[in-house]
Amino acid sequence: MTYAELNRYFYLKKRMKTINDELAQITYLSATLNDGMPHSTAVGDPVHAAYIKLNKLKKKREFLIVRITDELAKLDEFIDNVGDIEMQEILSQRFILCRSYEAIGNDLFMSHSTVLRKIYNFLDSTEVAQHAQ
Image 1 (cartoon, rainbow, N blue to C red):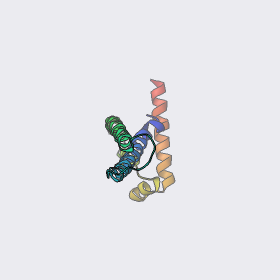
Image 2 (image 1 turned 180 degrees about the horizontal axis):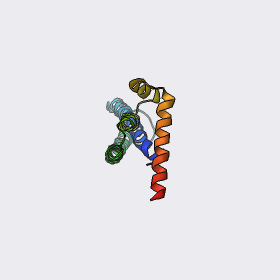
Image 3 (image 1 turned 90 degrees about the vertical axis):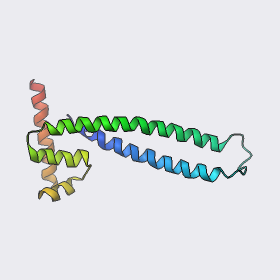
Image 4 (image 1 turned 90 degrees about the horizontal axis):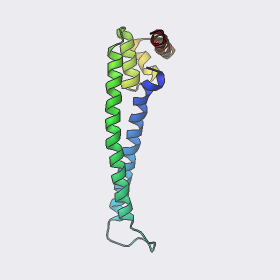
């Protein structure tokens, strides 16, 4: 796996947070719009527009849950197949728990640059091994 592939789970989780924030905002706004009073002279129904947006976001969220689950399964399988237990811990903390290099280093009593170097050295060695096969 490449660094970008390992980071995909992180960005999917960030996207999920964004969608959940949007859903909360639309839900709040649609509740304030749904008081039965006319809000403007413009043609259109803001409550209906909010309903459509809510449904669209909910469908995106459902699709994203499936993608996140798939990515997590791939990450787990990749990390489980790593022979070095220390590297398993570093990869799990970084790519599954989405912890910073500093936090991982503090947990494992090493500097953040050592954590970063270990990850890149490991990924370089696995990439070389994949090309050799």
